[in-house]
Length: 516
Picture 1 (tube, rainbow, N blue to C red):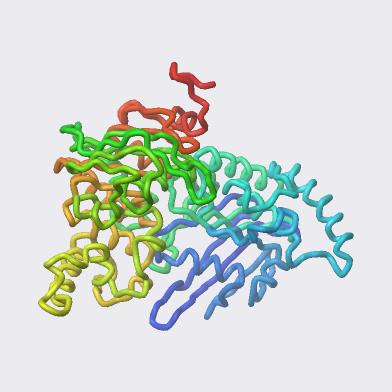
Picture 2: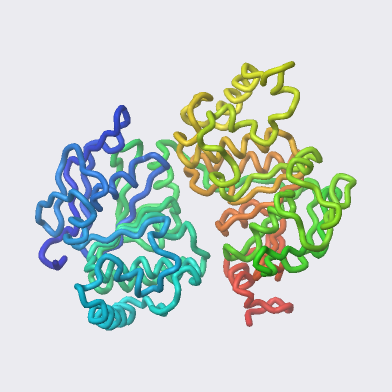
């Protein structure tokens, strides 16, 4: 298939899709010029993923038609899509960790009964693709041993190996560091130069403006706008996504910093395999201050949050908090830390923040269910729990505002609001917060940021971990950078910039404050 035969690589006409009473897509029209990078943006639940799933054959549209390179096609499944030259890289990679790169790429396309011949041909073709598209990766490496950025390259190579000339990328930078994201965009440019059409689904407006030729905006299942990227702005796109003006700047006054509320000294954590994940980390959290932790994902930030919150016992070091000295021999568990007025928003809301089978009003008290407010003489005070949940849903704009809805049935952003509201509304002295706006709509991000700043202005101490450097720089009064389990640098929020933090995150910054 060649994109040269028609102006549009993909053209959608009147695509609609309904799931029961939910109209996920309604009368969608879209034209994606061949050989371009085309952005698709919209809030959670806007219908982006459903639309991409229709193009890739996971769903069939109820009505409408799809043209690929000017030819009308019926795409019933992903095999039809692959035959039409369409590939998709999912947000959560579809790779077998214990297989090598080569084995993952040829899985399902082994090249006939003689596997040896298929493998030899695959090696030759992959070498060509790597050179053509700037996608170098060791094809004999075990995928589970590769960093996330390289695993994503494997997914792209897998799609190209199957003949994709149209590549759909779903939230591709959600798991990448700034450096890995920059390299991805160089890859996208190389793909475009070779005539590949890229459809980029993301909520990050800065990335849309930096990497796309055109952008289409979805809202509530409908396509509401198309723009030439160089002729639009972050402010206009945000307003189109939400349907109202959105303030993209975090307003906060100069902090009124008080006394030290928590002091950690030489925190060390060795995991079950004997690997030292935290290496003598020391920090202080002061009242009225937000301390941001920046770093490439997997460099000890998660372990730091877990040790401080009492989820994971430390191996060495000590924490001084609320008049207690906590050590490996005198530990405090998570319930005891909550009693001492520490709250924790975990990085992974599904694994550690919610029980998705619970109704919202039940999830809204997890960890605090033994409080007198929630308990009667024999049974739990369901009426009080429901009333409080309704109040929080209104204050935090949780949609739909239904305390009886199972947590699993809320969008990711609304699940996050339930978790953050639960912790913030306990009025903690220290708030540990990991990835506060992961998977959250742009309109809701503003509300969450305001609540974090409000807590800081009320004299609380906040430790913020985020992979979003923009978020770290916008919220933090002080930023610490972690690399390989250790703190390798610190800078004031007012002086921070992406270049300096990026170099620190790569451990390429010396003590004199210069790149190495």
